[in-house]
Image 1: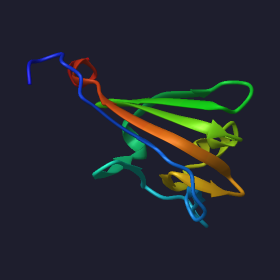
Image 2 (image 1 turned 180 degrees about the vertical axis):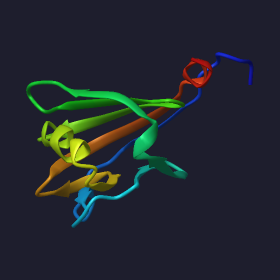
Image 3 (image 1 turned 90 degrees about the vertical axis):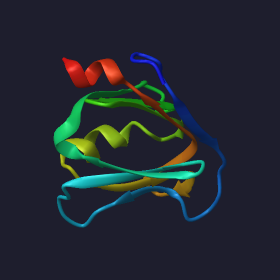
Image 4 (image 1 turned 30 degrees about the vertical axis):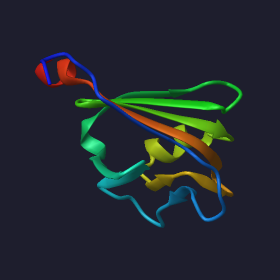
Length: 113
């Protein structure tokens, strides 16, 4: 893969038992599930995040990756990330949100900033 060339991994599915899993206390890492891959990201590598006002799209940029989560009731992810209490995000639904699609894109340029 050439420098600056992005790769992408995304998933689209909704089922019970997935969604956003909240930790009982602060955690150092959070995990994310996309097709064929499980990701673990340290909170210390997050650069910024935002959610649309309707709570349908959540975006996060880390030092090395861009994360897109699409679904419903995702606005509360901002508060959970501020408190470092998101443990896991995977397709599905629970009281913390409905996750319909997850996309992870490499951001190689970010590693050199």
